[in-house]
Amino acid sequence: PDPAQPWVGQRVGCLGGGQLGQMLALASLPLGLRFTFLEPQEGAAAAAVGRQLVGPYDDPALLQRLGEESDLVTFEFESVPETSAALLAESGPVFPPPRALAVGQDRLLEKQLFQSLRIETAAYAEVGSPAELAAAAQMGLPALLKSRRLGYDGHRQCLVLEASQLEQAWQELGQVPSILERLVPFERELSVLGVRGREGETATYPLVENHHQEGILRLTLAPAPQLTPELQAEATAIAGALLEQLEYVGVLAVELFQMEGRLLANEIAPRVHNSGHWTIDGAPCSQFENHLRAGLGWPLGGTENSGYTAMLNLLGEEPDPDEVLTLPDAHLHLYGKEPRPRRKLGHVNITGEDPRRVTAQLKALAKALRVSVPASADPASYWSVGSP
Ligand code: AMP
Image (tube, helix red, strand yellow):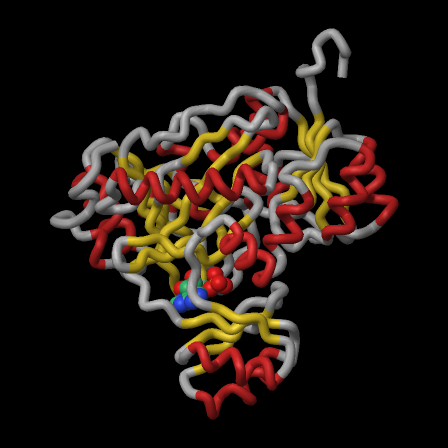
């Protein structure tokens, strides 16, 4: 870049080239930025809006090229090899900080971080052997045995209802370093997104409520129905403590359980997050733009909700555009990915000032797409407390 105008034509490198990378690059275009992705999958979603280097995330030559051709580097998934992030950090700024990756990749470090900040979690214990597992089970069952490090879908946690199932769970998980975590009878699942800039300034988006289907996020309601100022303050404090402790730069997602009016932290994602897709149409500044602004050292944009948004993920198949776009407040976002069962192919944001109107359209869309809508999305209770 021109030293007199260092902001012109900045180049962002990104590890990973899926839909999150695509949406980051989309947000970057009006800001005058250019993206290069390192991604092994040929013709990745992000390649539609940036340049793609095709190859493994830990290829030294490609990492060097990405570093040389970027003024700053970020990542769009959390299983980025920590060594790759560290290597890139030697030649230029990498955000979020690689340390956040290390924590996000290890459930034990995550839990310990929460604990050190007095953020409440489900009771848990570290497990490294069958004997430790038996000892951990003394804290009570049912519990989930979760592998410390990310496995692949469904293969990294195992429900243990009674002591006789411990041995089998240990085997099923692959005898890997794990944690045993008490099952929490939570009322609902929420998440909060915080963003921290290079000078340490922070902003937090409203808490949102998440609904999953077969373990995959299906629906986000933003803000979370019945959101009180107290609950939001608790979430903001949790996000703020984590951002500060990690000396974080960029967007951080925190997945939470609500139980008896309190928040328990489940896990963090050191990146932009699916439960923040509503911000594209429902907030003054999207999570994608704010992530970039943070990394660039630019002022952060507004994070308050500009109305009510229901975000419905499109899984497995692309809908007929007519079914979506006939709804006046629906925004269709497709990622251009090959359809495959359960795959995230896009999302729809329905945003408006009147929650009843949003709810009615959500229901119509869900019906057309044959998706069930949770009871909390009933107009009678939906967003009845708290105004945007
Ligand atoms: P995780 O991989 O930790 O995000 O867990 C996946 C899902 O399992 C969460 O979204 C929850 O629905 C459920 N889950 C995880 N941990 C617990 C827990 N301690 N108690 C109850 N449900 C949990």
